[in-house]
Structures are given as C-alpha cells and as structure tokens.
Image (cartoon, rainbow, N blue to C red; front, top):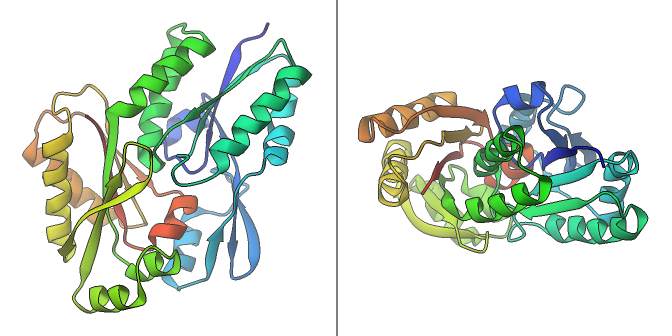
Length: 288
C-alpha cells in the first residue's frame, strides 16, 4: 500500500506555505455570483479572493452550493485508484451537508478500492480553526503517524479548537436567513455587530452583540482570554474579509492581553464562508 495524502476543503483557511509546498491539497467548492457559477480552488486557477470581496462589498447576490457524493467520488477516484489512502478535513457538519456527502463517497470507495482508504474528519469548525487542525494533520504525518492514527488524533484535537467572530454587515446574515429584516435594519442603524462562536456540535451560536468595530474587537479579546489556553504552543489564526487594518489591531490587542500568545497568522476568509458573513467580518481562532 502507498503512503496517504492530506486534503482539506477550501472552506478552511491555512497558511499559504502549506499549500505551496503541496503538503495539503485543497478540494474545490462552487458558489454563484449574480447567477454565474464560480469555482474556488484556493489556487491561481480559481476566482481571486480579493476580487471576490470586491463583489461582496458591491452587494452582489452570492450563494454557496453543496458538494455531492458524486462530485467527491470523481475528485478522489484518481488518488485511491493509484493506491493512495486519503485523509480529508471537511467543513463542519453543523454548517453544511458536505461532510455527509464525503462519508457516502467514502463508503462507496470501500468496495471499489479495498486496499486504499478514505477517512473523513468532521472538523466541527470552519476557516482558520480548520487551518489549525490542518497544521496538526500535516505535523502528525511528518512525524510518521499513520493515516488512521492521524484521524483519531484529530478527532480529539478538534474539541480543543475554538473561534469567535464579529459580523460587520447584518445584510449578509439577513440574506442567509439568520436574522429578521427588522433586526438587520435596527442593527445597521446603530452600528451593532453580532458576536458569533461555535456550539460543540459545530453550529453557529450568537453569544452577544456590540456597538462599533473597536468595542467588538475588545469583546473578541475578552472571549479569547476567558476561553483560550493562554500558554498553548499552537498558533492563533486571525481571518478577515479583506479588512487587514482591523485584523492587525486585533492581533495587537491579543498580544497586549497575553504576551505569551505565540505566533499569530493572518488569512483572508474563504469565499465559501465569506459569502455568509459578508464584508468586514473578523474571526479569531485559538486553542483552548
């Protein structure tokens, strides 16, 4: 049996170096802008993320789509056919049906390729939290861990990752059906930012609201201090919707609050998640 390969879908945000070094392969996902389908690959051959956020800020009509079992089978077939096993880090089942689709494809591969294996991890998270898991997945493999042991390790590790976020544009939440029109109007009028985190089963939970960007950043830092392992060896990921200034301010506030926080990595929020959060969103991902 050949070695195994690492995959993550493009709803996760990981430091560019891991992609460029081909340590993890990104599974593309599709979305629709003003009625036209686009594929986000995380590579140069897909829609550029900055171009995507120009569309978001222009209030384009953006919708995401689900990956079907058939699409997964077509994508992974060439790897399993060639004798490689697959370890795939997938977007939270609490946010999308893609995990269930991937599991269906994995079951279908068992009879077709009995000497190779497709292992699917439900991250219960998205974007930078998945990036932290992806780094762990890569390190495990480089340290000689088998595919199945790596899978079991990540199944434990995922419960040690958390995230907090503020959403700047209530119209994005309104469009996604997560808030009412009256809430969106009142919130926008008074510059109210919903504060969001994850539930244990990978769904989004509103844990508060705050007025203005600076106070919202302060709330994210408070959430981090209350919930994080402040001596964790793992990096923090700050993901933003083309809002570099606010992302850097958040990083400075985190460092002031916890000088031992370690490395902070910045990424743009994947279009797959950015389509639902809208412009201005800011996410802090950390180990707890």
